[in-house]
Image (tube, rainbow, N blue to C red; front, top):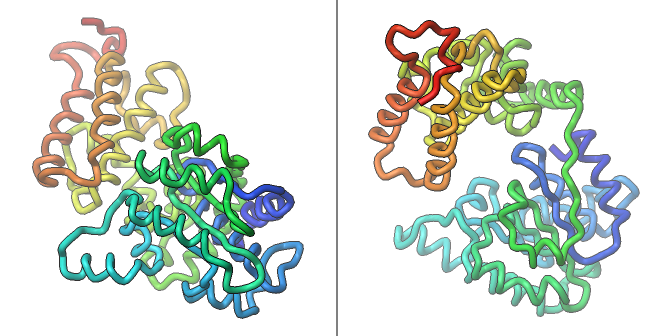
Length: 351
C-alpha cells in the first residue's frame, strides 16, 4: 500500500518533522502500518531520497526480509504473525508447543526487550528505529515500561507509534510524541488503489464488479484497507443491499461464517445508520431504502450500548455459536415493531 498517493503525500510531510517520536493516529483501514513501515525504511535507508527509501540498498532489503538489525517491531504476537514479522525464539517455541496462545496485547516482556534494544549500539550507520503498532494494544504495564525511554531515548533512536484508537493511549504516551493525523484518500484515489490491488491478487476479489467495489467502499466508510478486507470477506453489492433486512429478521445465514468481530461490526454499522436515520440524518454505510423503516429510538440506544460492551470481548467469545444465536434474536427484537403499531408511528413510541 506504500505506493498509494495519499500515503506518499503523508510520508513527505513526516520526513520534514524533527523529533524522535511520531504518533500516526486515525481509524483502522487508512494504512497506519504501511506508512509507519515506509517511514522506518526511509530513516534506515542508506540512500534515501526526497520521496522515501531507495528500495535497493542492503538496508531496504533487510527490512523487506524482516531481518534489519536496527529495526525493532513491537506488536501483539497474533498481529506480528499475521503480518509476517518474526517473534523471538522463546516465544515462538512456546506458541508452537501450545504453552501459550499468540497474544492480542503487547506483552510487557516484549516491551522490555524493545527498551533493551535501544540501549545497544546500532549495527549500521542510520541509527535505530522502534515501530509500535497498534500502540493502543500496549497494556498499562507495557506503556509505563516504555515511558522513560520514549521521553529520552539514548543515542540515535527514533520511535514510530501507529494507532487506530488514539483515545486509548495513556496521555503520558501521547504527550511524548508528535501526533500526525492520518489523511483520508479521495474516493477516486481509494477506488483506483482497490482495483489495482484486486488485479494483483489471485483471490475471488478479482471477480468483483464495479458495483461490488462500491458496496465495499461504502461498508468501509471510505477507508481503503477496510474496503479490501470487506471484499476479501465476500461482500458484494447484492449481499450488502439485502443484509440489513436479513439481520433485522434474525437471519444470520449471510454472515454466519464471518469472524465474530466482523459480525459484531456489521451490527454496529446497522445500528449507527438506524440511529442516524431516526434523527433525520442520511445513512453512511447502507442505502436508506435497505434499512428498516422507523425503528424505536430508545431501543437503539440500549442496543448501541450493548454492542459497545460486547466489542470488548469480541475476539474471545465464550461460545461462538451461542453468541451469534443470542445476537440474532436480540437484533430481531430491537427492530421489531410493537404488535398492531404501524411503521410510521414506531419512532414516536415511548416507554
